[in-house]
Image 1 (spheres, rainbow, N blue to C red):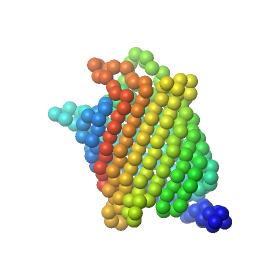
Image 2: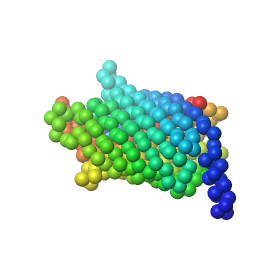
Image 3: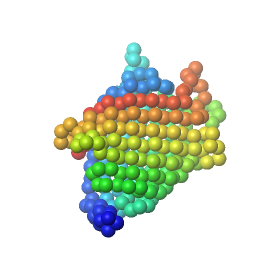
Image 4: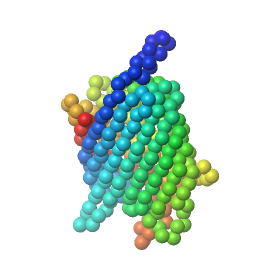
Length: 240
């Protein structure tokens, strides 16, 4: 059994480079800082390679009510995985957020760490956990600069991808990101996705996202912020 597992891992490492992409559009029901129905568009491109693989993705959310903008946010990320099919693999990432409705002119994270592949079976499941360090740079909408705009954080992230039946995948990611010198300042992010194949390259995606921040931006123009945000997204995804 051990020899078979080694062969399976070796075959995975010999996979030819594959470039893929996706586009999706849908709606989100949100509560927390933004109690509105949003329109969301996402897209990304990735390479799946045994030496260096990368994933570039972006998301845009917009909502308007009574001719007034209620939400207008951009998120993007770039992730690099090195020797990703090994037991231990280094990773680098960069994440960007812009959303003044959450109190951010921008938030920029530089991430470096290592991933441990716990168990995987090609096209069936993959379980991993990663530990990384983050350099966090934030430009808050608050002009008084009452909060630190730079911080070092830790990031612990378990991830699961599991095939259910013939055409459904469950993807679960959880991030815990405390500030190194103050564990009372922390971020928690959870993303749960059910991806169901409809036809060849068309999928139905249902995503639940939960974001929590223990420290809130200061009040701006009589606007208060919430500790947590919840969103439930329904979208159609085109995989290229």
